[in-house]
Image 1 (cartoon, helix red, strand yellow):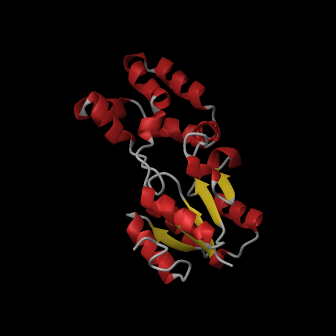
Image 2 (cartoon, helix red, strand yellow):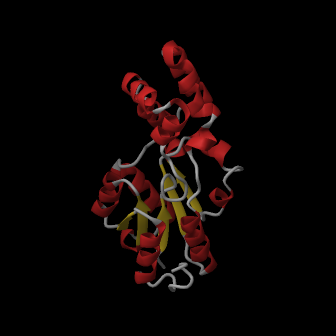
Length: 205
């Protein structure tokens, strides 16, 4: 039996912090903010297991000239992680309806994931959740893929993984996983049909 492995950010829900800040504070000020403060490193710290609110607010204290904008990363996190990609969510549900095991493998903070779970109904629908903040390692470190294999007991060649980051895809490919670089849900749907896991109708095509 094959199992399908979904990333969450930009596969099931949009994750584009720059676009959020462009809307809220304007592109020029956003560029200055991201040039002055490594917000992606801050988020990586959270994804690796650091506390969610406390980490972001600490960074805000360390950069008082940008404190209000940095705190938005926590205070308005729901907007940073929007909108949902409904086509991908429908594929997740179609696979599970066919009895195909569906896992999440995501760079996501332990505490931010716990806060997101009641707000994003589809997060409760995975058969297994592999969350970097819980595991203490982030993609594309090969260890996170090894940990998934060890836990689920499924051979690498029977795991089909989609992610929007080429480096994450290549790390999985190096372990023998089937992979799909996500660009839009329709392309992912075509791949699942090609794998014989869904019909075109079931995939929404």
